[in-house]
Amino acid sequence: MAKKVLIILADGFEEIEAITPVDVLRRAGVEVTIAGLSGKTITGAHGVKFQTDVTFDEYKDLPDAIILPGGMPGAKNLGESPKVAGLVKKMNRQNKVVGAICAAPALALAPTGILNGKKATCYPGFEKNFPSSVAFSSDRVVVDGNIITSRGPGSALEFALELVEKLVSKEKAETLSEGMLVKG
Image 1: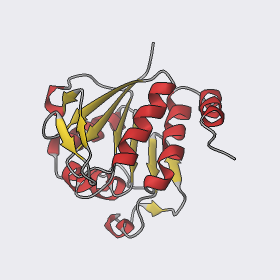
Image 2: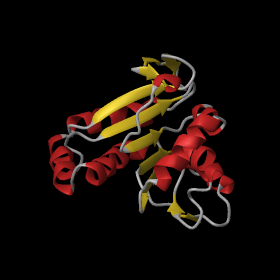
Image 3: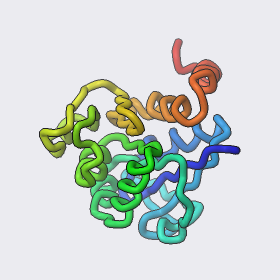
């Protein structure tokens, strides 16, 4: 049975960080649902309008993974949602995959406490939002248990392939990487 992933878009999200994981995960045979935090039409940080599959309020499933893109004020909007925080905590308690990129690890994950005692990364400068209990890394993608964090738009493809490796297999991630000409 295909793994299920929920990606939540909030107005002001970084488009590359949203569409790249959706595309790569779907290539890997993962069922991806795109949910809009404030409705079914969400506008990215650079003015691109996305039509989501559902609103976040309509989504009732418990996925195998959740992805929170960054971008401003998208990451801030995700971080200010008690419902997003509740789902993040529930996913973490059940050891399901939690992925966040750019400002989202600092603004949406850190406030929930799930990064405490973990190693994580985020967009440069946002690490000041991590509590001292988070071990900041400047690596492009950081995996600590069930949590995957990444730096920003330029690392979105690596982030997506790491999600494929965690949810499907290392072989599938390598096949996709090769087929998409990720490495020269």
